[in-house]
Image 1 (tube, rainbow, N blue to C red):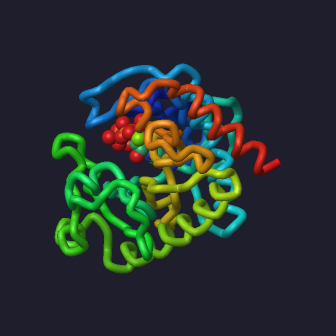
Image 2: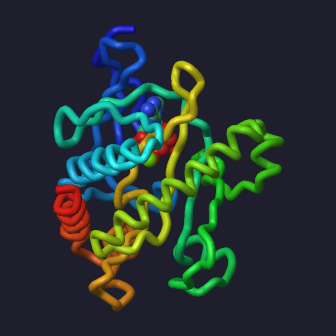
Length: 242
Ligand SMILES: Nc1ncnc2c1ncn2[C@@H]1O[C@H](COP(=O)(O)OP(=O)(O)OP(=O)(O)O)[C@@H](O)[C@H]1O
Ligand SMILES: [Mg+2]
């Protein structure tokens, strides 16, 4: 395959081929979407911020032996990654109730859980990423039982690592969405991104529900100061990693 070919353009990133068929270049865009792309906009500087945050968090996770697709960050908005076959499952880990969970269950926003809640959604835009049960996921053959157990264990370990890291940044990790893929040797590895687009992050120095939001909910809920909040997350992460 020739290099520098656009392979796929998603809502937040563009994937390009490189000279190595097992390596892709991902370009992070400033485009923002919410509510299954019904709401669209731009967050100035988001591409660079999210790529840098993701790179730092992947490096952190690698240091704790979590296999990730991260290779290098050759420019602020570009990441070299191992090419994987993405499993069509959005893995969501929640520590505190927020968002769709509150709408679907009636749990009050801010309810702190006794244990992390791991959920799976079907990564399918035309079906609007519906919530899956374990048995649905297995019947649909989106993963094998062994892969699913591995995914769950990795997701919980990732949550432990990220939760304590963000705590050190005076940020509460409310919930996050991750994606896994299979590499050339069929090893399960963490892929995609981990950023304020894919996490709920609350500033521990703020108590007012709107003021504490440091993630894409600022865009979803038209709270304003989206760029500044994303910048603040980046700044605290960079300060913490030193
Ligand atoms: N290492 C990787 N190898 C192959 N594909 C990847 C890798 N990491 C992420 N992807 C895929 O890149 C695509 C582009 O990312 P982006 O976040 O823009 O997608 P999206 O629009 O949010 O979601 P999608 O297009 O999957 O509905 C996603 O489909 C994601 O699953
Ligand atoms: Mg995405």
